[in-house]
Length: 415
Length: 187
Image (cartoon, rainbow over all chains, first blue to last red; front, side, top):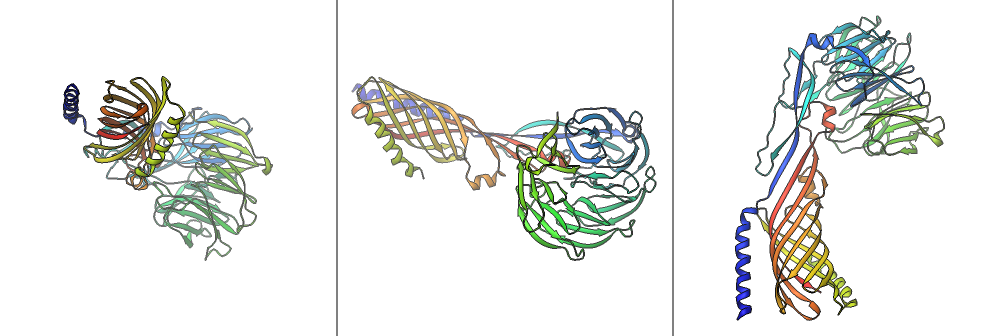
């Protein structure tokens, strides 16, 4: 009798508790995302902000350019770090040239060419204590636009973005979309300076490049041509429509190799002010930095959020006949970005998989010599047996004079 | 899927139990199969808990498979106490631990292939134990269960520059609250 009573009470307790818990049975979810609010300045303010400062820590690096003993490293949307690399084992971050909105650069002698949002700015850097803006060519990168319906105030320039994390309920489908927080796109890189001055080298991710007396830049769809026979006074000469989703430009001999998300374009510069299309090597929609030598073009294809696609590989394309580039062989990779070749040695930044070093003596039989792991490599420049690697956490320099024993010479860590 | 695991778990538990009987502190194993219900629907769950029994108390470490909304694996500490000394007795229990996400491919695809990190897990309730020999028994219980799933997904929208886009993530924090009804064996 007593047991029956206990059971009844327990059963009643369970029923009551369950009823009370009904209000607590709601699944909930929150979604946290980052909203970006633009910070504007007037055009005059922005131009007056171009100046050289003492070195500042590298925080968010972008493109890299090497000229002589100096490394020029872009700080995304902020300017250019000037690093004295006289001793690769101990590089010195010497100056910072503040150029708001800067993403790409090239240097010829003492003249720095850089994008300043929509404009091309020419800066004399011969005296680090007194850099001078020599010329500004306005609105030559008009495709620096923002997506998803956002339009910047055209009378002013966005110099920064304020990031703010925002949390919303995700279980009620109240998806908040801020039309102010979109996505911008710009263009430019590359380099190979005039024979008359010190030769500079750009990374393979570049959108600016120097070839003889011309500066070539690519936007999302066009190839822009600037005559720099008078380096301090570049003249905007021509715009050549190329296609869409243009990403990189690389010079070799008299040709320009232009990487896009759908293929590699080869342009001839026998008439340097009006490059003419020679051929196209098409591939599926992915991102594709490209470099070239006498016989082959090396194209890294990578997938990803922005790049779309599913391919992650190196394509080696025969270009002995520039009119008919032919795929020789593809090599699978993890998430390849920039690349560089020195003699028969090919360096590929393979994203999270690190820096890969190949013996590329035979295009049909690449041999992996070494994988330098532990870094997420983005771009690489090779010079004088030193591989300068832009990674997510620092600028690394490796000595590869002995390929059997590639050693880390130095690292400039980002803040 | 769950039923495939159950005989194996019971066998393991039984083998361990057979090694130690009659002492004050005894190894004991509990295997549960259960139903979870909340406003996200109904789902199955399975658990195995291994620990020690002393008198009316039991404490052990458990692991489970939880199919409520997102497939997850809770790892937890279980403490329970029988309320009576009779052969058939009510008991209370509490589990506290961490919840690991183990999404299937469809779930991953639907969510944009997120990266997950462990969340919280707890389960408290009341039950009834029908005792057999050596404190073995059949268990029936009902309770309230909570699991958390934390995920991070890369997003293309929202970042004003390509560079920012590379580091643009959305973070999700899912809190699932359910009634749980379990039956099982204690060996």
